[in-house]
Length: 421
Image (cartoon, rainbow, N blue to C red; front, side):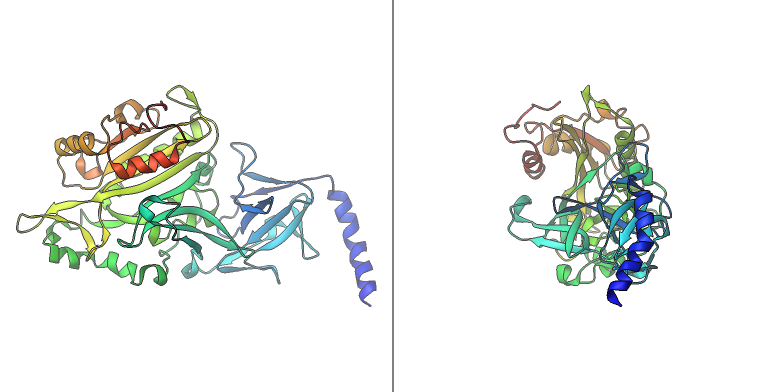
């Protein structure tokens, strides 16, 4: 009986396979964003998130017999027996994949998510200090697929302050294609083992601690602190990669007017630049961008007694950053820029201007690069929106030792001074 069944299956599939054998499989990664599965490619045993073959093209290409992995982390497939943590399929042409002896077409695959479970993430930790500044913990955030962690981004995490020093991710020119996707998750993901506290409750109740600091009067319906993303939700192509941005380790306390003001203009401008620009300051842009986003120093405000007070959401933990910064670096051509935003809507522009050139970067080039990076809508006359600055990746101009060290590690060995544009 067993042999007879095998013969029967062969008879059913042979005509289909023969008909499609000369074809590749093209998958529309952005069709049905509410239900499409996560797609993973494999190259030399390395798992990665694929991108379209050509720009302005939403299609992923798979060669005949090429292996694909379809996943539905935290949910389930409509196909009986499909493994949500990684279902292998081999391209048979025309969008059809052989999955466990069943020819299944990508456009029929449905991944049903339970919203409360999104994002269903995994992490790995490196406490050696070799990957990050100041011996911070290196965290990779991604999805456990086929028993392999496929990272979406990295975090250099400070275990004492419980805040990211900086994050690192790759930005491709395809990310803007996915501007309209499913709604973002309704919650942030965090591991109790990482924080040993309820992070969401701390963000929700920070005014209580601000009262102890004597700075509660700064918070009202107009100005309040919000979890500001370091790795933006919009910087990825697939819905699952986007969901991964909703991790409390990927946020820092940011004043709402800055988050929705000039910082949002910066994030949008970078996406527009990636999608449309071919040069930066005369250098031909080649390859993807490496993006590092971080925080710097602790913000201060004058308390009710007149004493300047450093701002934390709770005792000695979750500092409110004084600065947010973002490096965009094109390794293939050794060029890039670093943007800074001041996270204090109550600051005076003259004071911040002086602080920047005295303590952060000796040469502000924001006005020189504003047009190239589509930042015309940045309002640098309104501190409430977040004052913006920019610096070239010149180590002799970057004055802050933390940022200088990050840039030094980022640049190729031997590039130590003004060797970039």
